[in-house]
Image (cartoon, rainbow, N blue to C red; front, side, top):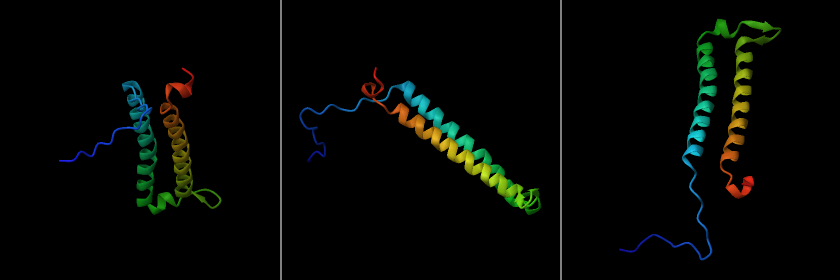
Length: 99
């Protein structure tokens, strides 16, 4: 039976496996991202069931539903930006971090 394994080219150094602490921090960041976005989404779904509540005027033409949607969008963008920065920081090799 032929093997599908292809040996690496000469002089190739394999990528180091991430340490367990990096994996735990990455998993915690994923969980925080999920929770920070799931809670506003769940509240937005509850608001969508009640048109009288989501249509309540806050300021001029700004309703509670629109304000909540804008807040949810802001939270999503902020957490995605923070998660992306965290993910980029944890994937650096020791050579890139200067250690």
